[in-house]
Length: 269
Image 1: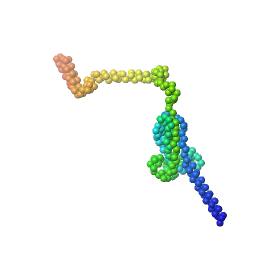
Image 2: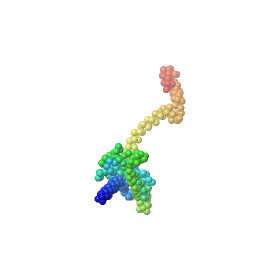
Image 3: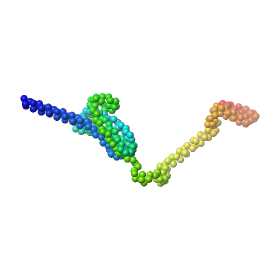
Image 4: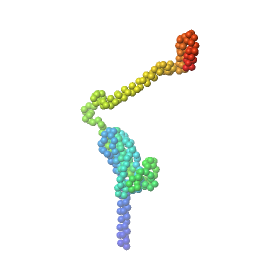
């Protein structure tokens, strides 16, 4: 009887230790760590937030495309990811490019990654049958009960100004005129720009001259440019032409055919 009791206690202890070990293993497999590519970066420079996740085999991983925006900091572009096999699962590494505009100590917001079973989930696959799930479904709180939340703690980065204390003490001044007009110019580019401008002017000048000449010879265009009614301008041009024909005296010289021909053309115009 005592032997049976001892055996039962030993079996219970073994089961308890085994269950605790499995639970700890599951917890370890779902851990995630975050780190920055640099602790100090320049204002406006791009740096990265790296997130490393232990993913069990046959899992679906859900993560946002960008880090939540914060004061003076935002995502530079969408996340990149890569994976490698590790034990019975894999390690998924997320790379979030960030850019900061505020000077000083800037907090980098944390984020949440969700892991669940990959059964029936479509998406890019990686090691040991795991897939990248669609984040939109998680963001709308759809099916969160079946997922394990893995938080990534917030970070902090020191952003330095491009203007150093030494520059301020030395006195900041605009660039010298020689940097704008002088020997520091790119003379090859300047010659190309001037040459192209001359060619363009030579090509456009005849067209502009012809257009101005045509406009000067056409009373209708002149009237239009002055804001007059084009119909009235045509009538006035016809009357002026008839007066000119009459002043030639063709009808007095009995050249009636030429007189009527010119008059008809003026009226039809």
